[in-house]
Length: 176
Image (cartoon, rainbow, N blue to C red; front, top):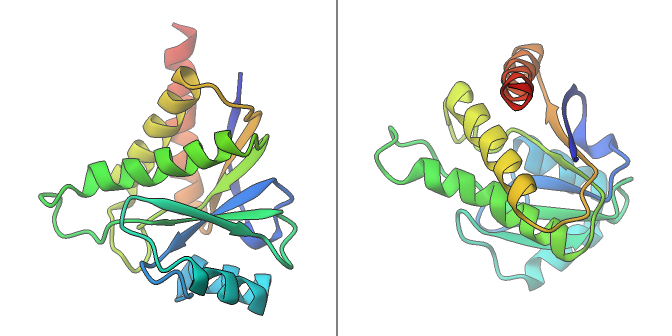
């Protein structure tokens, strides 16, 4: 069974097969996690991303990790929160599913996610955490993959507490 954990830290420092980047549609860098990943990976990442011609919301594309400890970066574009009536939940769930499909295709064992769309895109953190954990656990339980360890890498203590609370509830549900 794949181990799901939440950790406080810097996703650019994790030694995993791949990290997921909460990217914008251009894939050319931006603020938050996206900017931090581009800065840490170095200029090779920007060059490779230019060749990808962007990415649609809810989809994912993969690049090399360059100067990161992670060998690969899975770039996914989360939805901008517009009140919840514009298919935001399905698009956010799709970000996780499409990233996991790439992880399965490349036979990754260790993968790390940031909290997609909860920064400047304004997705309410509690709803986003529920979607992230539900989507990831459903995928892991119903798909063929090599994943042994999935990390939800949190930027703040409050986010970490939410992820840990949801993971704890998930584990309790699995025990009953």
